[in-house]
Image (cartoon, rainbow, N blue to C red; front, side, top):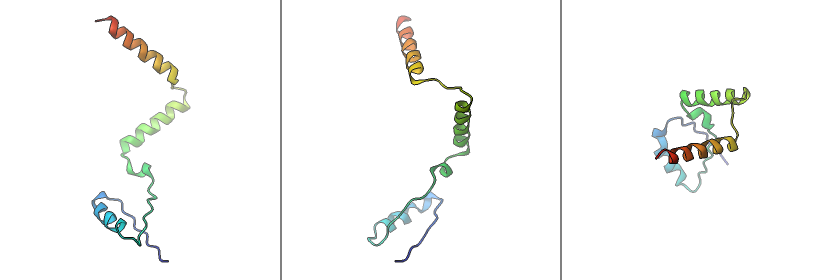
Length: 79
């Protein structure tokens, strides 16, 4: 068995991958790390979230739900 590795970093070659997938003797494994495909801004946002967690700037699900319910109730009472 022979193995061929193709590193495609640009989606403009997706047609080529689709053609390969249609061949019964070809198997494709996508080993791409999703982190490498996101924008610098997204990476910055993720890092900020990690820093928030590390520094205790978090809220529990229960706290967020209670705040949301209070805001909804307040909005209903202002009409």
